[in-house]
Length: 482
Ligand code: AMP
Ligand code: MG
View 1 (cartoon, helix red, strand yellow):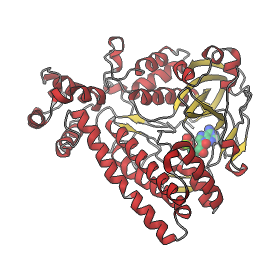
View 2 (cartoon, protein in one colour):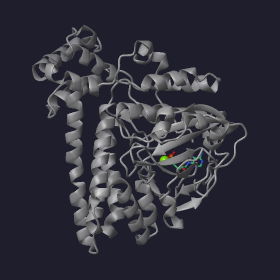
View 3 (cartoon, protein in one colour):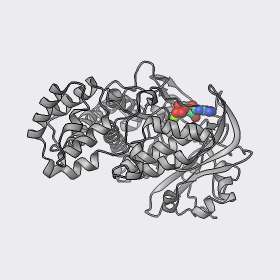
């Protein structure tokens, strides 16, 4: 199999990365190849699933044309700056251009130590690999910009984590690029303005090719990234998604969701909902995500100041003006997305939306199921099931009366159906799939991935994935697993 690599990041100066081959593993075994994505990338699925293909996916064989590197980056983690993070357990094999002309990184995650590993082992346990596979592919099917899962393979070796000696695995990630806000911060921290300019030019060519040239292009870059993040975060919010580690090194310039660690979809709605075991202060709670998005973008803007103008005062003014567009864009997108969920005109009213979210929070109502049931009511069913989701009926009945007078189900039913998924990767189901896999049975994992490929469709064979967890099934905490 000849993979038509066309690498551009590896052409950047050597200080952008470290050349690093993946580490061999003892007994690679295929878990799953994403055939649809493979086909889009013009990769032969038969070959990927063969012993040679699996050897590549495990890091045991480096294909011709690959130029394996670990990328350098820095980042603010929970607000504190680390000048050197980098790919500590990931190796970029190279780039391929898909059938539609779009460029993608092919990256192995969990394939051994790199010069950026610090105290880590560079490996991944099976759990986080399956988690990223399930959630990133679900996000894609839900219509959210995201990195993708090309494959997962078991390595046949154990990795030591807090929970004990766990089966190891390697994940193959596909991304528009792996350039992060933290990649820019890495060079700002070194006062390497030449590198910043090269990185910005590379990012523009790759993600925002209409930005033009010269200083204006950097303004367009900042604005494009800011608007892409506003749109992305509004979309997360509308699906009850909590990223969990919105550090600047986990914020992609492309506008894709990246680095699925302790992320989660909410079951019962709660605006300050947090799952991540390491987010004790609730910095990355559901309701904080838009503000954190702006905080991260402000860090990005700081890295571009030297490129925006030769006059530092003017550069700051320009950056501020661009960033001031973010809150407005976010608000507009947020209202439009929630309006669609409620069958309202794209402008809301926001008061009706907020009142309902407050009720969902007070009564601990399941977020996804509420909107499904509301969609059914909009489609003509009676409101009994919907109203029964609230522990005391009166305030909700009052709200429902207002909703009936404001919403236009006849006009917006299709929008509601397209905005309110039947299936999300519920935490307890992801957890069950992982536990089963550790026990040697991958059937629940495959079944979950198959079901989540069509999250907006009614699929009778997967109704068990629709229901919220029973009290004893609720997962309250999620882990990075690194
Ligand atoms: P994350 O929180 O997963 O986004 O990772 C933050 C940083 O820790 C990145 O620089 C990772 O490369 C690094 N890292 C995470 N897990 C490991 C590991 N097992 N070995 C080496 N580095 C790691
Ligand atoms: Mg990361």
